[in-house]
Length: 509
Image 1: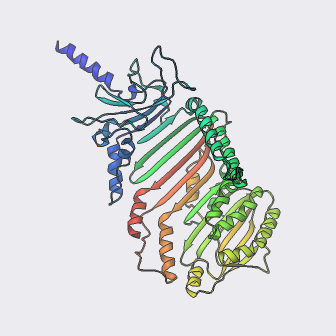
Image 2 (image 1 turned 45 degrees about the vertical axis):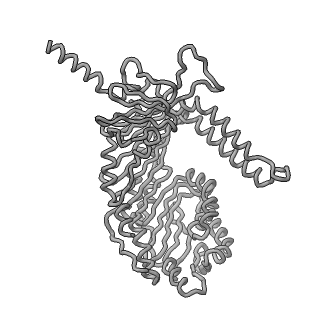
């Protein structure tokens, strides 16, 4: 009898071992997994001496009134599952049964979880010790007790996500199309005069065009996966988007890497492919210029936009310190350096009045070099001029040139020697080298500590320092991001030193 009891207990234990994964429908369209949220919260609390709140509690409070009663050590699952109509009941509405949300978690011993029915879940039940909240009228466990196949696609991470986007979009896409069309139509209404004004027409047309592009893009996506892990104060995350029809990419970051190693280290470094640069310039930087037109960097970028069709992959370095002020170095591929430099000279000459009127920056053509201008800051206020000369010293030049098969751009002191055959490894070159599996479209490294320290040092040099704390050179506070093509999709990776950023914030306060 005891032997039979042991066998029954063993089999029962084994059958429960896959909870909660085996409570997810085999037809699940999406799953979000949170592993041991308590350890994540402990790590967040250790990063900063100040309260960081409870972000996971905040998320789950939308579905559960008392999320602090959840036993996070057992994991939490949020899934989207297909709508199922009860037997004999006909679908209602234009689109039939729609996908619904399911939340699965385990309450702490002696605790009872309470449903919050305002965020897509309206029924709850307990199943073998697990709390299940779901949309729809009822929930029942999948037959067979097997783990849903969607878990085979779930990436590793403390928090991970997989969405079978193609299948999901086939159900929610038509609704999105209809709702978006109705909203855009509501925008295109006549004014008090009974006539639709020109501004409204243009705005509606632009939004309509953008909406169509989004709809087209969504229809091409097969799946989306994402993951995030917090390890020793560093938050790493990845997003992978797989398209339905996309040929395999050829990975070759050689030129981008070589250009990156020719740059010196800086506060901000980034690289972009030629195609990504064109997209960014055309659709985003025009808007940035409207919002931040007081910064010379944006004006430089506007000039670069005019040159986009003559360049390919490019790398850029921004630096800021109390000795050299603002420094910008850039290298770009080009198939016609002569045409590029000619266009650059023409563009800058046409913008000298704008530089002077909007940025208090006078560009004086260099008599010896046709694509070089000496930069002089202009103004009447002595204290303002001291600040400006700290950021843009009196020996600053604005120059385009040629470096082998590449074209170069320099904004900084004449004494600067920005480019060399190899400056050695820097944050950007290391980032490119560590992502050999990607055909890189964009890579960026920002040293937040160096930037903050430079701001403090410049304030002191300019005489505007009000007794701010000194910024130490350590610990690291680097933010990195990479976007690239892989296989039949794209991957976006980020890494943020949260512990270093928290320490930096404390030093600045």
